[in-house]
Amino acid sequence: MTTQETKPSSAAYELATRETRQLSERLEDLLNELPDNFNGNIHWGHVGSIGHVNTLLSEAVSHLQSCVKEQRPGRCGCEVYGGTER
Image (tube, rainbow, N blue to C red; front, side):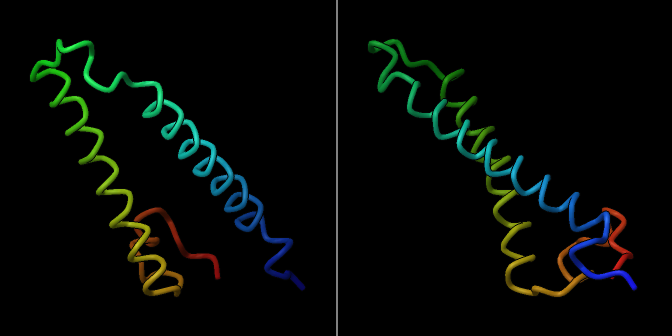
C-alpha cells in the first residue's frame, strides 16, 4: 500500500522543487547585483549574455507552463524524463 506521500518520486519531487526555488532566488540575487549600465561600458557581449539567459529562462517557463496547464502526469513532457510512476 503505497501512498503518494511515501513514493520515492514524491520526495525527489519535493527536493527538486526546493532546488528550483533556490536557483530562482539566486538568479534574482545575481540580477540585482548586475550594474545598471556597467559605468557606460556596455558592449554586445553583455547584451549577448543577458540574451542567452533570457533564452534559457524562456525554455524553462515554457516547460513549466505546459506542466501547470495540463496538471496530469505524462502530459507535460514528463515522459521524456522517465515519468512512468503514477
